Length: 113
Image 1 (cartoon, rainbow, N blue to C red):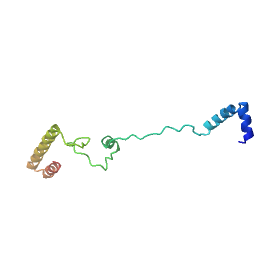
Image 2 (image 1 turned 180 degrees about the horizontal axis):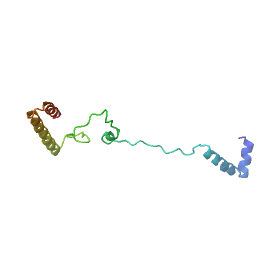
Image 3 (image 1 turned 30 degrees about the horizontal axis):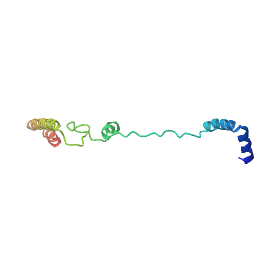
């Protein structure tokens, strides 16, 4: 803008009207005077995310005796006791299957145990 025009606008007070005329043009043209808010991704732990993203055709199912979700700490005494009881039950079932002649099913239970 040349200096003479600038001086005339400032002296006459018409510069305010020029600003009011430019504001809608900038708003409609997509020029952002205020930056849009930044979207932040939500960080989900693997224990929560796994059931939603698991592929049932490719994933190996978790053993129901193991805690769900997996814990990253030693088992509590109550959890150890429950696990021992469940493993003893598996061993008993495997013994019954082996005695009845179903060695393949018994072997699967022993391997699982």
